[in-house]
Image (cartoon, rainbow, N blue to C red; front, side, top):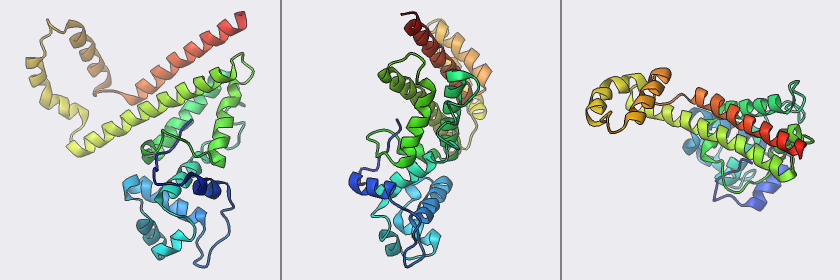
Length: 256
């Protein structure tokens, strides 16, 4: 399962906030929901490092101390942000398992939805991993994503491992895509422009007779992707191979 980083968060306080009622406004008119929404909008626009209690308060047009009556600090706020984002993944808990193509199409849907959430909220890549503080939406996400695998012949541990493998693949490729976009912004050059500038130098230092396979494969990949890598292709190719392996495992279990 995906987790969160937020080392300054108190798990007990986060759990109380995550599972508590969020609708009642305080004296300032603020609610936890409005605070979290503003924090997510800020993170989407400027990155997670831009999120602070002061910046969120300014976005809401209130004093910083007003936020602390609802949320103890940034660590707990990040936990709430992640859980809220997870709540936007599926319309209901049976959305993946109700796909018409069985477990395989359901897991393709799960992968696509998780891929999309990282595209919408790339800041989440900075908080996944580590120990999870399981909020209601994270728990529903786990339930929804496991249901397609229930009853196909896998053990409970295998079901969890299959889901973790898929989510780890999605996270890794999403991180690649985010890093490539950041490098392009920092350098001011597209991958094609970078290759145009640096290819002559690489041709001089990379001896094709010494690295024959690397030269051939690297050239083929570069020509195909017109970039250092193609995250979309990596996502689709890797997911297909993972699901082929899961299908083989299910077949072995059924034969046994």
